Length: 611
Image (tube, rainbow, N blue to C red; front, side, top):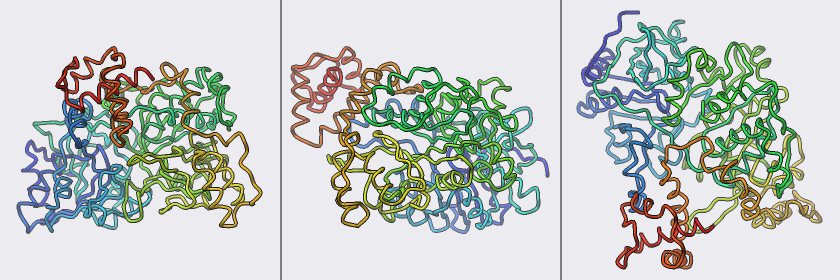
């Protein structure tokens, strides 16, 4: 290795990179937060300005802050974008893709999308590469990258890949072994926590380092409120995790709910909640954790950090309690990692996904460590025959990607005592209508039915492994919303897959959102709050969120909207109504000429207080 060349100008660094590669850069970028945005934008701008240059980008999870749609979203989001999502600059290539102006000498391919971010964007959909997370590394290597660029933490003359060892760690290992040849360049971030394990590199691994004059915040994945449905799913999942076992959970409200339920289980506070459940409960994991859990996960999420800090995650493997491949989380979690005592932070080892998501390499050691593993991942739809769809809205349109979900299902079948748990709400609402997420057949399959294992909705757990098609159908219908059960029974019977004389057991025949809400209502303000793991939203914004949801739902029908307008006049004011209205740039006190939108919002605030 030669001495690292240090740059203060990203444009100068981009020119040096193109010069070192003969004008053709095949750029490998980590997914998510680990992208060195200043370097990438400089490379993109240089290629945009000079058609003789060539820039090919292979990456995943290009992050963008939300773009408010409509006046109400704009009023809510725009004043808080930097606080909620970080002062995170956009990626120039993403802006050009969205605008349809990406020049021919720049190409971008991704194997995983920010959820829903590229729906209807033709270029992104055409250049999507379907690959399991463990296979994405080999797909990248086949592109013959000559530049690897990453955002690093720096400490005592060393570098840490921090949030993205996922694929990068293997690339540096292969280069050291002579299996790859590329220029490594990096950008330094003071906000990036210095993580240990294979994340650590010597400075001379980099050919070029950028110390930007205008550093930026890391992207923050803001936590959303946890609904009744999601809390119910978390409560079901928490009973399926055996003490002394291994845990993996994903990002999002259901992951937050599952982590919260595990914390409550460990505190011994869930017995009354479970006792009053209106649906049958599965799983025998109800006692506090004596041995504790070990986590092996592609994604280090806030729920796992909460379990680690509370001591639920405490079973060590090779000196670590958590092995993870990457992270994207809230600004609060980044700070907690930075401020964590070094000895404690050392218990979190960042690893390549070839370690976390697969059993290849030291298989005996991994099998010994990953005892009683439970891999918990979200899904979008599931068929009554056990197929799971997690990555597409309809054939051809990718919402996110396969990611590591298939990898974890494979591990669940390969490891003794392991199970894969697919979680999903039983229904979804869109355009004023409610549809079932449990269907006869899914339009796209992420996990095929021959790998069906466990499915959890708010109405319970369906254990599918080793069951006949008929029994799988019965179990899946039992956890569907009752508004759709008769239709599913009819379709299965017509297909000859269900005995015509079978009748749904009474215990599963009253699956409704109202019953779930009534069950959880006594615990929603304390034990099962909207934000069990904390929130970047302030107290007024937390009041506004459910009101805005109600307003959006009401806007789809004349009757619901009329009721909100009536409530704005005749219902009692919300205690913080003035602050909430002012936060949305409306008059704090109602007046005769108040816009209809403001009146409807005021009515929504008053209705949520009443309910």
